[in-house]
Amino acid sequence: MLQKPKGTYDIYGDKALTYLYFRKIAKALMDKYNAKFIETPIFESSELFHRGVGETTDIVSKETYDFKDRGDRNLTLRPEGTAGIVRCFIENKLYVENLPLKTWYLGPMFRYERPQAGRYREFYQFGVEAFGSNDPMMDAEIIGMACNLFKILGLKGVSVNINTLGDKESRENYRKALLDYFKPYLNDLCEDCQRRYEKNPLRILDCKVDSSNEIMKDAPKILDYLNEESKKHFDKVKEYLDAMNIDYKVNPNIVRGLDYYTHTVFEVQADIKGFGAQSTLAAGGRYDHLVEFIGGPSVPGVGFALGLERLFLALDAEKIDIREVVCPDVYIFSAGENQKTNVLALANDLRMAGFNTEVDYDSKNFKSNFKRADKVMAKYIIIIGEEEVNTKILTVKNNETKEEYKVELDKLIEFLDEKIGDEDED
Image (tube, rainbow, N blue to C red; front, side, top):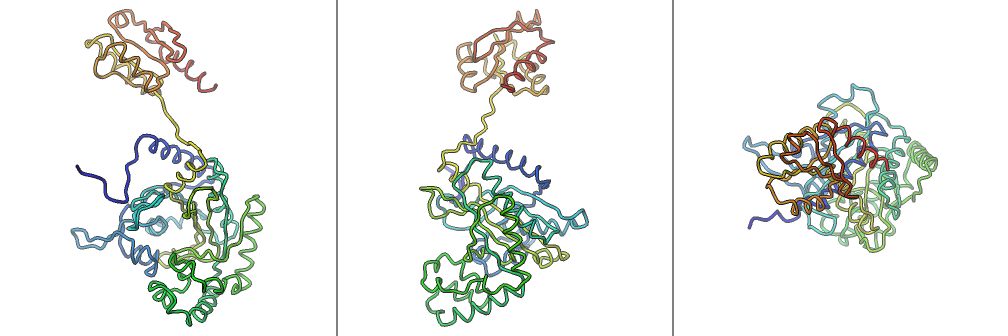
């Protein structure tokens, strides 16, 4: 029997209902922020991710799905969303529109890593990218978006950790300090960190292998190497977060695992009993030079992303059910094989009038149809027989109260509008 590839999963049943409801909630929130939806290709030029995400990252060096197509082009399944959104922003000249521009996306990403709870090789990511403002107010608003999304979903056990990487000058000063500090300890670091030492020593702080190494405790902190401009930016971010009543903690150990971040970086973590070590729900920050680095104009950006799989684990841990079960408004079946044409015609009219409608396809007996109407949780049942066709008067049954109504065919939509509309208001 053919099976799905390792590290992937099927979306169906309750999981599909949860996914669809999240998408509905996310879109409604993004509309309130005037953020525009963007969808980019699932695969792109490998060069985009090598340049945008960074050659020294584990994502590019170890985890990307790279392949050649029949035209001998080097392509990569997208491992994250930001680089593709930036490419779209540049290629379609979205920077000539009114800036700032806030965008959001939702879709599958791919990384070759060891599957575990909340971590898959194909995973779904929701993200926001905002372009055109280097004001710290935008940093705070992006953090607020993530917090408000979790609040709407009902999560209570979350905390916000923020840090700053400063501007180019601050980062360069910090880089030199890290090189000086780690040089005597090179042999005590893992092989990956020994390579990172030359290319990007900030990555050593983000290493999963060496995170518990004693030498990490005394490593220099970026906050000690900020210039005045970077300090002012970070202080303003904190001021705006305070204004929105967002609780946060300054955590100098947050450096994020991607090359393109500058200034503010943040993580929203789940403080939920039994949730496990992989506690980060959302993460992001500012990237003022990424657009220019990929080949566009000098346009600042800031954003965040979250993985749906880990979010759903957090919701389960807090026993929050966000499924939106959509039940048929009407279930129609016939009193005989020769009435199936009328069943289908009526169902089509009702669907086009806006009613969720299910029908019996197999001419089952009355008992089986009533059972199926209960199973799909239909609100109303309509039976079409020869008498109903001749008189054009239908018997409509409320499947919950079992009350029956005689309704003229040409007044059926008006009747259902009134009945189902009243129920929805209740």
